[in-house]
Image (cartoon, rainbow, N blue to C red; front, side):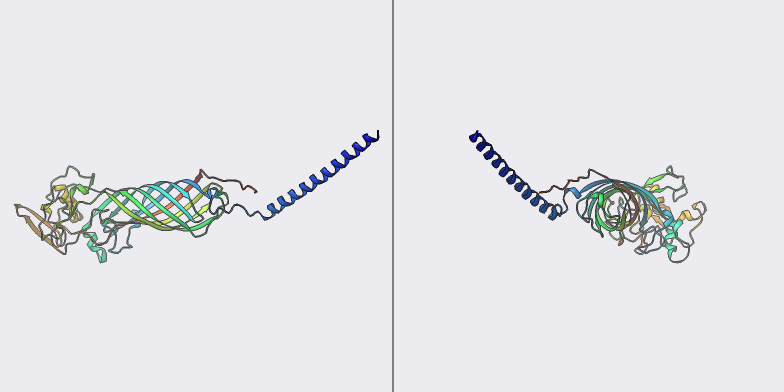
Length: 358
């Protein structure tokens, strides 16, 4: 019995000491965990994957054209009445606290008319008498970088309520200037294309497909490409609508490297050197300002085709005839178009990793 009592006492002492050691171990572990929790400041991984996201968007846009067929001979001149709509779809990727890269496809129309935008007197008289007009359907694919003025170090859920931004990028676009054909050619004969929109590039209205003399002002002119590039740039602001939707509004310009969005750039050529009656009629349109195109010009100038002396042309002096000062356009200024945009974007494919205590 005595031996049994000694064994039981020994076991009790051992259990008591073990529980004390376990309790001390637990207290140490809890203390260390509390210290880690108290000093935790989140993941310090920079702008990590949890803050990156993609967004798809749809935009409604207004296009304005700046070029040779504008009310005044100034770079900033445009005719607001020829504002035309455009629509775009986009995919954007957010990859920094201030940075977004967006790809967009845009489709819209540019348009202009001397007769509607200019006056028969004053500074715009030259353009009024030239009487050119056009439309051009633009298909643009762009990649643009956006730089926010207010940075966002949080996840997409906690992004800023609004921020202004600037943007710049690169764009490629297809274009095709067109104009409506008049009822009659320059000799009073009916045109089969009367009233129809016709492509201007194949006509070579400035002598692109003609045999010009070395002394001609447009000598060496080449057909322009319908595939062009541009530099988009501008400013805007983005507003958070809810956790996954943003509203963007911006005004941007496309600086192009062509002067032929309107098919007007250089000088007039002698009309008999063009390749068809339609090309002649689309290159010189001053005669359409008179009723039926039959009233003699106010300051007439007449010349003949040397290979066909019976074929004569009577034009307004300064228009429709080869001469060094008979400008049809200004080849030193490239065309520009402005894009005013309202875009709605929806965040997709966002990644958010919960912070883990270490």
